Length: 64
Image 1: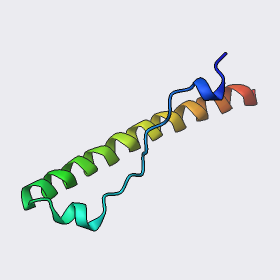
Image 2 (image 1 turned 45 degrees about the vertical axis):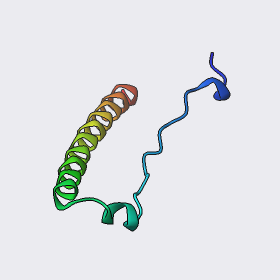
Image 3 (image 1 turned 90 degrees about the horizontal axis):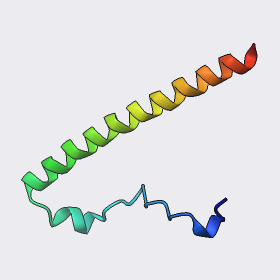
């Protein structure tokens, strides 16, 4: 069994670039960032849906 200190650190999922960092990006880079963020939102929603489905399935099994 792993101790909490032995677990790999979770990535910073909520790193938010400063306005200064975003201002340094070109229009093309900003557009690419928007596309990437939209893809990440969809990917995250898919994973969330899978987890919610698994939880619903588990709840249904244990209700019996």
